[in-house]
Length: 373
Ligand code: MG
Image 1 (tube, rainbow, N blue to C red):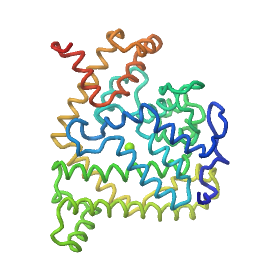
Image 2 (tube, rainbow, N blue to C red; image 1 turned 45 degrees about the vertical axis):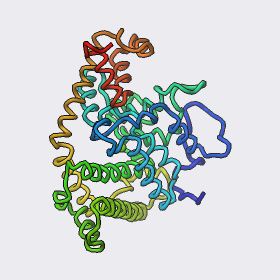
Image 3 (tube, rainbow, N blue to C red; image 1 turned 60 degrees about the vertical axis):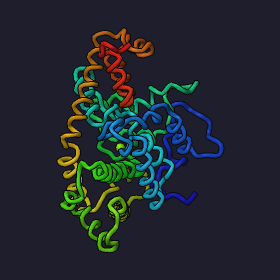
Image 4 (cartoon, rainbow, N blue to C red; image 1 turned 120 degrees about the horizontal axis):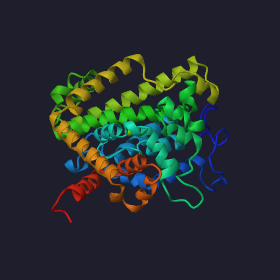
């Protein structure tokens, strides 16, 4: 393994695990974290959870599983170039969506609303809850007992009231500090991945068109260049080649700007990373182009009438399930009934958040459809 820069997270400076464990043989602490995430139940369920589209709508769309793998690929490339801890960015990337509800943003908004009077629902907090509490696999502890830096990277955002209850991993939100550079990189790799694959999924599904996309600078520049270099190119290749170049441009810009910020803020160790403003960043110009792309997607894809129809159904399924389980805890599977004795709303929320898209649809049918046995 290449030598890491002094401000990278390493086994020498890690704050370690909540429950002490012997040093792993043949792999690093962060490889062990990555491996535990891959073997978790919540990770496997990502295959049937979606962000924008509902899973059964078609096989051409990304799921949260393939999304997470794409995030890990982008984040690892950046981390390797910057001589940061590649295993850590991979672990954070693969775990970052573990707490997401079924049906992407729509499902999450619905659960947020349902949980308003019961302490709220935040997907980042839920991802941490999955790896800290909800995975019941290991004999010696609840959760996956991951290293502090992996847990910190998973908790991207957090309301101050929640942060105050979390101990060390919540402190940075109260002290206005930044997480490790590895966490910052994984966060931006997430953004690069979803913007680009949403364009890809949107174009291939026909919800948005190449013509519409020509109004987005970041896309149009590469589209023209590919068309000029390869006249008569088939549309599938044209789309992929344009998106591949777009991802490259974003990654290269992020690397250069981050290197510049490391110099400007004279970052020498992790304490410097935590105290400086965000070190990992796009240049001002790229930030603006990225913003334009996001605004386009919001208007033309996420609010497309066909997506809105799916979102409405998703919201209804989540809020129906929440209501019916809250009215009668005896409808919950036994392990959640047990949890509900202590905190009914949290048990219902954990049960719903853990569902895949198709499981939630089936569960809704099992409970509400009269002809269902
Ligand atoms: Mg994500």
